[in-house]
Image (cartoon, rainbow, N blue to C red; front, side, top):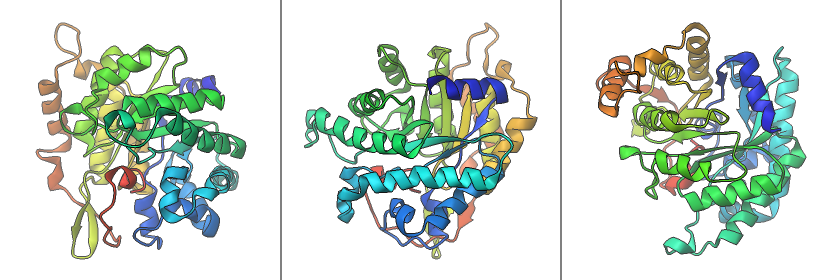
Length: 356
């Protein structure tokens, strides 16, 4: 499985991953506070339909509706005994969506694995490394049984959690893509920088298929994190960017995302210039955004020279941010994208990510 994604990238060029789950489910009737993962069991047609919409929009990779389908997260809804059934069905529904879509190119399925939502004992929480690894393995083995092509471990913020998730990946004998979420100053909530993430990965005996960044607070900040990884990335590991449409704002009964289709397509163009292998969207990203991203990826020539200095090295962050501003607008946040979504309850930031 490790070579599957790499071979697909070699054959088809820059790959397109899908977009948000929760944002799109809210517009289809998901109630505030309800876990979208339960829709695998109670509203499977809705899950299939969203997968199909992303495939039709041009996604090469679709992620299972299983971001929060681990026992730690499901326990909040008294569903911790449904980890296996939810993940099995998540993979099965993704497979069914691909079959129904009859896409001439075989779509790939990433088994979405999000954070546990718990703090490790090492930083004052209750979660042990062993417990985290067990939680991740329970989900990973269920996704494998359901037929995913690889794991897609996303929105992590600590290296200890990355290690536990990758341990589960190795134990389940599934390749994995792993992405962390970087905010301002290119740091995760736990203070990890892209360089530290890359250094940690480089020391592992068994390396993931791909690494990168997802979510965050918008395309500009994510692009800076991705650029830092590109500067030092081993070429055998794919680089992944899955940025969101900015931080949602609640106005007049609707959630506003500031990343328009045009902005997200320009973000994708910058990703291609950096040398990203897989580009997609996170919170707020609809099939329409993915269609715009697909168009720019197919029709824009990669221009890596645009992010090089006269000496041949990659330009520094200040210069690159000027390039970002010229592409996305100054500030890009002035442009708004609206979605008719009910107001969200205040919840754990780690839980809200990706489910949006």
